[in-house]
Amino acid sequence: MSDLAPLIDRLRRDDPDRLAMALLAPAAARSRLVTLYALNAELAKLPGWKPLTKRKASLPDADDWNGKEGKLDLLER
Image (cartoon, rainbow, N blue to C red; front, side):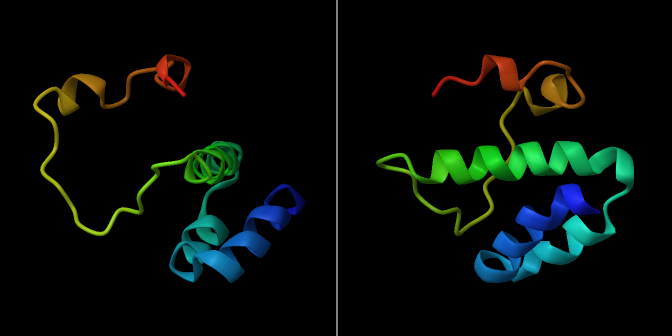
């Protein structure tokens, strides 16, 4: 659980709703969670980043991307 310590501290402070998800994640998913939360923290610092306040409909090709490996490598910053 030590790999989650920084994440837990940040979630406790900034996003308590997601804290339970991080705590309950299976060990195999923890590394991915840490990576995704760190990416979100990085992107949130970019100018023009807006918080999500509403759920939108999925994009038409969402099913094509579901489970696809290597998506993060395609992210343009």
